[in-house]
Amino acid sequence: MAYLSSAEHLAHPQSEERRGQVGWIIVIVLFLLALVLFLAFPLETISVQPWVTAWQAQLRLALIQLGPFILVGLLGAVVGFSEIVATFANYPREALRTRWAQFLVLVNLTAAALAFWIARTYAPSADLVMTIIGVGLGFQALIRTRFIIAKEFSGKGSSDISLNLGWLYDQFQNLCKNQIDLELMKGRRTAVTRLLERFPKIGDLKDIAAYTIVSRATLTTDEEKAKLAELDTLFNPNAPANFAKTSMALMILENGGQAYVDLLLSESTPTPSKPTPESIAKQLVEKYTLSDLVALATRLLTSENEQNWIKDAAKTAQGAPEASQKGTIALFLIQRAGTETVLREIL
Image 1 (tube, rainbow, N blue to C red):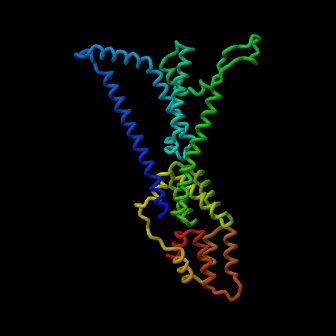
Image 2: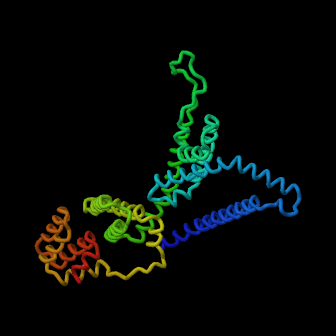
Image 3: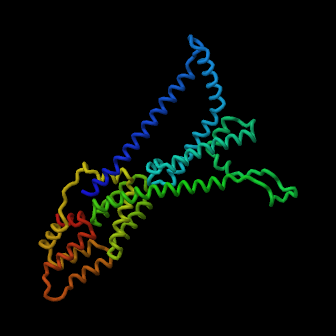
């Protein structure tokens, strides 16, 4: 199928890129382990070249001097990760994989180290541990501080020369988050398109979206009700069909995540064979009279517009075959209520 070839085409570059990232992580971890072992090993107790011992001593001294900056930078990176995850709560992993997200984390790391240098410059006698923790977790507040370089002689402050790094930092953050969102747009559109190709019927999309929402463990009762109400609003005969289906597919993606969508679209995922809408409609036509079918459809479809449509369809011009009327109503009922709901009534 078309969507499978598209999915395979998109999956290979992503998997290769992911393998490359994992490879770099392994190399960095091994390098850090080797460095730690080199610094911790007592070279003075064994016979080695003097320059090796001197190099180890210099590295230890540099680590002592740079250690606080490294710790603060790591805390700043954690804050950057948290900001991205909080901003893109529906796509945290995908957002963190973007280049702009990695750039934002790197800038946060650097900004935290810079803020620590400023803090130590202004308060060199402050407790080192508390300064590391305070600056590492609250460097954004510190970097938004307005630093006065030259004060107006009159003391009014209207013409003070100051350095406002906070404004630049906020602008940079907004730029990064906008670029991350734009990068994610491509992935969202691709996933929605594949869902629409895999599940072209609005009833199937509604069933999957409802199951996805109900299955979420972190949603509160109010959030779940709000999402289900939004889903019911889309499943409306007055809503444009394409817009409704696209919105439902996006709802599945946002509530289930990319991995869940990949599972739904996976070729290896067993898809149970279901009766077609035409076969279900045939059973309805054979089992129910026109009045009974109208009563069934009116009971299952609570929307006033849908009920009025059914009643109008049952009042077709005189001479029209009853089977044709029942077939039209049956297909409309299946489309709006979903195949599973109708099957439960038949079986």
